[in-house]
Image (tube, rainbow over all chains, first blue to last red; front, top):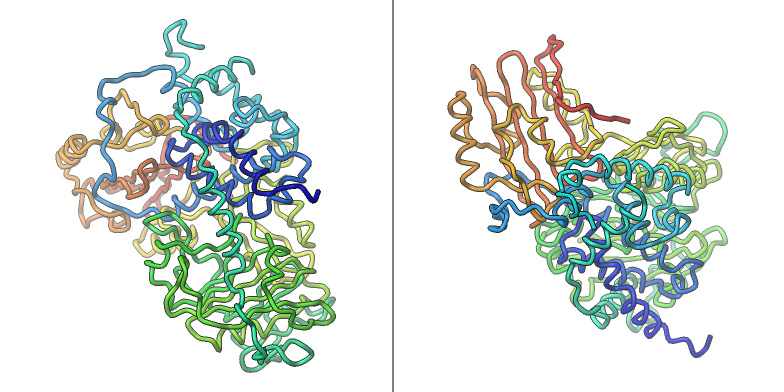
Length: 172
Length: 450
């Protein structure tokens, strides 16, 4: 234990998990830029108690839990801080006008159609590849709820018009 | 769709996200800074001037003026009477509490426009979420330094202890404290503010008090006490979703949680915004805690908004719809003029913002209906006198990726105001009808509520 280097352990973990965490954050609904910020925030918070995280029964579940909590908090805070304006805060991407709808857009929209809890369970289970048990731990819900949400999310995705509208063969 | 297909879809989408190298050094620095912020109140070179912590090692100064007033919620039987000074209320976490003036709120914060971090907007008690009550350069610019803020935190307490001075005990429970002093002006400098802090390790509580007045900090920290037997502090549940997650937390505090979702059902519900009693309230064990309604777009509690609308001779009913799908905008809006035209493709999950040209077109169409031009939300709540039909819409200022759209309409018999945006649980639609009318809004899509 005396040889254990906390910083080295942390940076090792971060290097290994960084891509998956960032992409998970994108799938949870962040832009890539926001996702990197979110993951940095989550990891920095984990670092504060890294000795505890490192000794946790399931480190990934712990980190994803912090990530999801940070994401939830960010969404909540942004909403509550909304201010009315006559002016658009951003202009649409010029590429949008071309009406390009591809698999990425379709999946992105399909995920966007899921409620936040359903989306989170889908991302953690099917992208982060957490087990049902880990997903339950990460989200702080019972395993049975993970199962029921996955079931409902899959049904919703199956019925999603954006995915259904994809030309044959576009599904991976 | 089966699980393998879902995984492939997500891999496909995730794989297209470009990811740079992990900024290990930056995160490490931030993490270390976070640790320091938790101990921002460390006293460099603490001298013998521990004058504030004297009696029995710790000065339990009389809390504010008259200490013998019995709180309104004191039960007539059962636990010992809860004694709180006149004009104060008790707020706590885990096993300890302090007194603050009654008119100080709870979690009275709003996100700073520049970085989204929570900033106090009134004298308040706050419960930092996952990582403390950090000060950013942006927050410094928010000019909240005239406010009094009490922060109660139960994470990373053990790590902070070495930076504090042992300060005796309260009824046998060891307490550590910092001096009250001006904030050290590093990156987290806050002008014109003093702060003081204490730690009660056995209760796992780290309490900060920020104030422009030293005496206020002394009074608050001096009022610390163990929560008397028979009472408990309401935990902060902000941002949590599930009854199954919340209920054990509430139970552990000796309270009863009123489920938001019927037993056996798996509801999609939004995060908890606040509770009744409020987080930190010291209440008799066994008290029932309920989630209070979601705020409207300005963060005003539902009941308060209803009062405003009632003042406009309208009756209000808030419906929260739990099917979140931005492309449903056209089906919820008054008519399709309010929706961006298809195809709606963007990076923001299914619907994009109106372009300037579309706004102009919308204004034109509304004008043809005798509508008013774009106006801010609050003004839009009041229909112009005598207008046959009035509508207003706008897109809110938010981040690059989140947005909100608001619509108000009124046709003489009924009126309604709706908003939609990036919200975890889905839509919120205000339905406003004149008093005495039975009119209600009709949605074109079935919705699931909880």
